[in-house]
Structure formats: structure tokens, C-alpha cells
Length: 179
Image 1: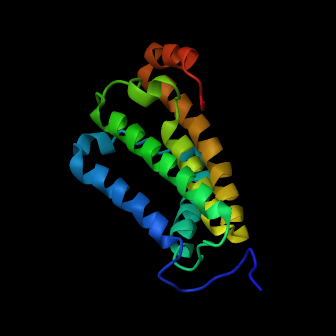
Image 2: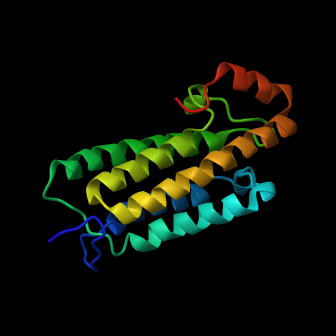
């Protein structure tokens, strides 16, 4: 009997999907200037949420080794499409982040439509992973991950307002938070 909390060690596990995300992520770090990495905001005021976010992120990565893909149902194919859309959105968001000026907020490309396309892409990528695995464990971890991200992104916006002033406030008025 297959359950929503099934684990196994196999070649056909979720790690196939998480490895695509990690390769893309490290590719951007290698290909683009180092000063842009400094633009990633850390939020020391939200230590508990940041810790929860890191723990859940690493749990998703580690558990992907043991969470089997459920290829026998339609959700698997729907999940692949959702995952690919998320990866493409993530690539676009990271590209525009990487080529933007260090001293200015990122407002071009996909950032014209959403202030947080990276977080949206995380949601879409992990949703795709949920579809291809139909995993209850992954659902619980993903829920906690997104819960922590919500508080972090709200604090990041306050930091951006302080750092970029009216430029960010005007951008915030013209651009939706998500979609």
C-alpha cells in the first residue's frame, strides 16, 4: 500500500527535480558578478523565521533523496509542467536580479509585474514537486517554508524602503507584491 508519507532510496526520487534547481542556482552564482550576491538581503530582526526558513529549505533538499516520484498518475505530468514553469520564472527573476545595478532596486524584466518573482517561483517549483510526489511530508515542510517566507519578505520590503527610499516606495505603488 502506498501512502502520502512513503520513503525509499531510488534513482527515481525527487532529487532529480531538486538537482535541476541547485544546478541553476549555482550557475547564477558562478556566471554573474560577485557584487550582486551581496544584494541578497539578510533579515536579522526575524531570526526565528530565518532559522525556520533555512531548516525547511534544507529539509526539502535532503528529503528529496528519499521521496519517491509518483509516475503512475496524472499529477506527475501536471507537476512536471508546473515545475518547468517555476524553473523558467526563477531563471528570469535571477537573471534580472543579477544584471541590475547594485545601488538601485530591481524593477525591470519580470520585476515589472511582481516585487517578489523569486518567491513566486519557489512557490511554483515546490508546488510542482508536490504534484510529482503527492507527499504529505513534503506538503507539511513546504507549508512551514512558505509561512516563514511570508514574514521574511515583508521585512525585506521595509529594508528596501529604508535602503532605496522613494525609488522603492514608487515601485511598490506601481507593482503588485505577488501576481
